[in-house]
Length: 90
Image (cartoon, rainbow, N blue to C red; front, side, top):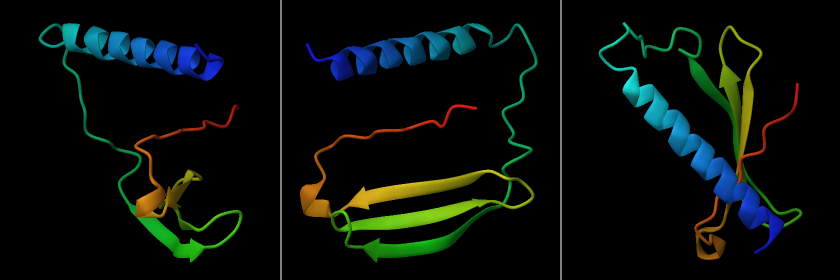
């Protein structure tokens, strides 16, 4: 088993545990799921790029915050059903 498969499995298991833990809190505490920070998303770039390979680049953020996002989508015929989410360390 490759290290990447092991890491993805560990991340998946951790996520399942978190979701289960949050479900167990229902009824015990008054929880709010309304997002009060990221209310106004915007996209300022949505374009096809050719380097390093052809892909759709989407960039944006949330008004009133310093939070930005970038998505890189392959052409439909090249998508292999995988998703990678890189989180920049603080």
